[in-house]
Image (cartoon, rainbow, N blue to C red; front, side):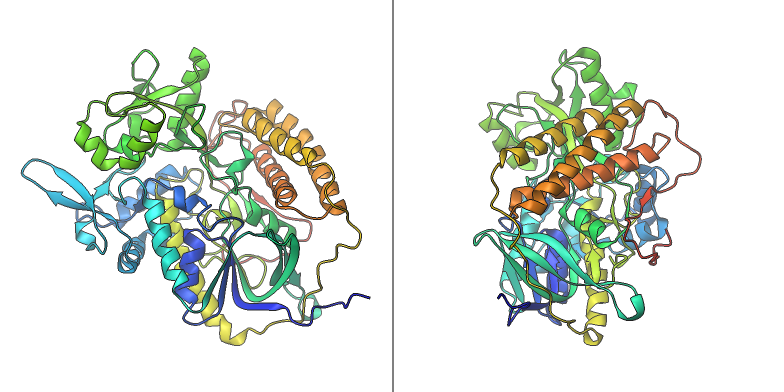
Length: 558
């Protein structure tokens, strides 16, 4: 007979699920005081951070101010940002950038000549020398970047630092099946004590015990057919936290990036908003501009406005795309500022110094998520959520460009301090039961998984997309209920695989998005319902409670 427990289970002080900017930052900020394990579902770089082009919003210019950045963020969030969180994050922006500079992130710096400012990428730049660009919603130039590949530069630096730290273990090809929670004495607040992980290389579920667990798994934009996100963005952390008993909030606010490259062979390639910040214009097929008809800020309006404008014009004209035009800038300027976009587009026969870029909106960012406080603490003891997985109140009804990476660093700083302060008083709990596969069979029909995955993404795009209505939302609600049941049945009866775990999570998160969208009886920010076109005077968050919620209210006061 199989023993109830392994003789020796893996242990770590801090288990971080996700290897992007948020996860690696927390690992580096806590590893001097703790044994840290970071796990990635695929290759370490297969997260949204690596592919981020734009940059990090921070107040570094004398003409800028903390107050201005705060007000811009509140305006973009359309009445749903929590001011205290916005102020906390923005006020630490210079500190976050300074920390990254010390690590060696090769940010682009300014070099002045008699008549212009150009940029070159050098490591260890002084903060005053960093080149700043402007993006939609920002009233000043405050975007720090590494040409047009900021995410890659940040990720590679963080990864190298983590690989060189003796207290950090990086594990790839591990998919989390579920979190493990245990209830304390007298039915007190449950605590997270570890997780079950699918080792994809061995096709085996492993157990890892941990004093603290951190969800840094990114968002859920793979719920949509067209997205800028990598394949792993299936809402895993949000789904796991919900099943464990955490609240989620504002899942209806899915940000659609206005400009994703439209080409049959270009998968999920985003055209950074910084092009518009440097003067690129949006045009219809006939060459006429159109943003002036939708917002006085034109191409620099917040993303929700620009995406809806493009969606409207495409539907009005029946065209497949609109165009982004930066050909009026010099070739030298464009190639220096956007070398990666220039090279990538050239691979598809588009010379952006001479040709307009065909673009369409695509799902980009999940503004809602797991409810947390300013330090990333969830409703479950010893469980944290940071980055796009979380709902801190920073983004409100619409995330302002380049605030997302900033949130990753600042909230990770706070979470690391909170965990390290509690670590001396936290012990490992009792052993976790082994994973039981005695009553399941090998997967016998994976086409069911791929079919349901495809169906979810298609009806989410058609019914829960940029513009919504009640009929479409209710149709999506009926369909997702059936697909969730099918995903659950398949999970229960078959050995787990990465694909069926992702489908299970994607179906759940899609239902959460639909439920939040139906509950909001107005149009606000990223949520636009033609049956409720007005914005209510008072903005309220849409908070969902799981059946196993224990009535906990953390310091978010939601």
